[in-house]
Image 1 (cartoon, rainbow over the protein chains, first blue to last red):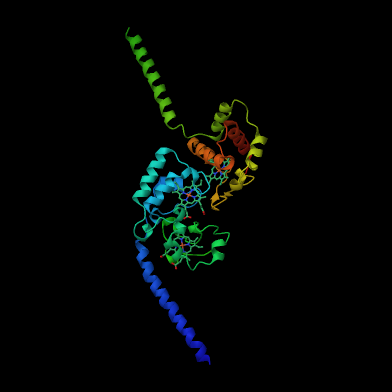
Image 2: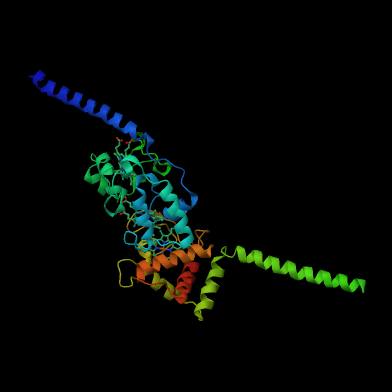
Length: 161
Length: 140
């Protein structure tokens, strides 16, 4: 009897390990993931209301659309003077996402609506997303302690409760 | 004759020096003190600021979802919290946060954006003067 109970258990443990190994192999790919020194002006202008998102997380076309709509930016006025707007738009275009980060222009040009984002966060529970310390999926730093360095490595993940 | 031309020369170079330093001042005119910005807004509006009116303006809604206090707190000697992202916003009162109201371009940029979000239009010089007058009365 104990064996009968045990073996599916062991099997699923094996399954879990296998998944983890596979997952790790997949994540290894992402280590080319977008890490770029943020332009000081970008940090200055684009990190007052939320953290500075890594430019490599959206395709150039999404950034361009976002930058063209700053006066109506997700329900708030984030407008810039023309010179700063031009400089930051060009910088974002240069460092915009490639590969899987550019496979789609996600809905609303949100990083948090991109297919890769949804896939990577499949295991995050709805209670975690709704926790007051998180508040919004765009609040990367609530869980990724290295997000301000562009580091989304699993070792830096701490889900607040 | 000789002395005269010398003194004319030095008078001219003095004028040039004054002109130059005025130019230098103009170049860094973004740096300011809260009192200077306050004086600017008051001069623009043409009447003295009213502290109580500033507090009222700041803490009440103007026909839309947010008041200034929604993000900055009812008493902005403490950090606030962005209404939609939850990001912390440092205190707005100059007595607590020495960086506040020291860069006219920055102050103007945020007045423009935030007034637009809260009122659906830019704030008048009188409204800015009132708010700043009130903020300047707040002590830690």
